[in-house]
Every structure is written in structure tokens, then in C-alpha cells.
Length: 187
Image 1: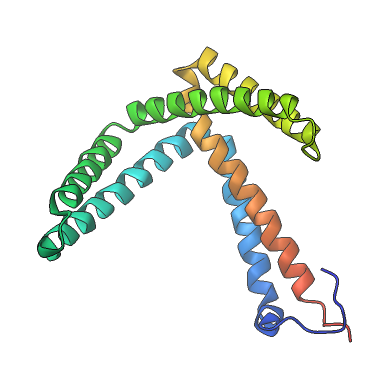
Image 2: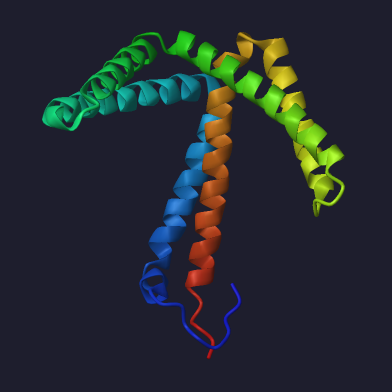
């Protein structure tokens, strides 16, 4: 991070605690490596956590519906809360089926989104760096093809692999931030 002679406000706290931030980065990288090496377990854990989050959201949504009955939208909030509860329970009790459904949805998303990005990047001549849009479209499209071609087997490992990769890169970012924060500000 280049400085211009001024210290960023709030950086002193990061500078004092750079060691803890480095530990956070290392722990996230280790968790990411574990998740990528045990992607089936990480996939089931990810789906289960999503199920728990939906259960909690459903309870709050239903509670919100009953707290605000006079504001209108009661039935909408109640329906959304029940839908969250049912979906969360299904994901929690049937994580493999949930992983299969989520992977299928993501495969279609990558396939269609990649195709749209590819076509729009090719058609848009005035867009800067359109080559990156073309590359991104091709990668997303091919990822969708691979996921669909290997589905439902891909459902067992894909979500866990994605979570693991995200944790690795998040850990790298925190470690790099910590190492840059430990340096004193240059005047």
C-alpha cells in the first residue's frame, strides 16, 4: 500500500494488532486447504450451515410478521418465513440433496451467464478491456458445462471446493494486509 505522506485514519489499530491479523490469515488459509482437500465434507457442512441460517431467518421473519400485523404485508412476511423454515429444514435434514440442487442451479447460472457475457462482450466493440469479458464468459460457460456433465457427482465436491478456494484467498488477503500494516507509516 503506497502512502502519500499521510497516515490513513484508523490504521494505527491495525498496526498494533498486525500479528493477530496475520494469525487470522494463516488460520483462514489452513481452513481453506482443509476444505479443498475434504471437499465432500466441506460441501455438506456448507449446505448445513445454509440450512441453519435459513431456519434462523425464518424464525425472525415470522416473528416480524406477527410484530407488524398493522403495517400490511403480514401474509408476505409469514409466507417468506415459512418458506425459509421449510427450505432450511430440508437443507439441514437432506444436505446431499440440497447440495445437488444448489450445484444444478449454479451450473445453469454459470452456463447461461457465461454465454450472455461472452456474446455481449463480443458484440460490444467499444467496451474497454472486452477481452477479459470474453475470457470470463468462456470460463463461466465451460464451468457450467463441466458441472452439468458431471452432475450429480459434482454436487458432492463443488460447493466445498469453492468455499475452500474462497477461504484460501481471503486468508492470503488478510496475511498480506497484516504484513503491510505492521510497517510504520512513512512520512
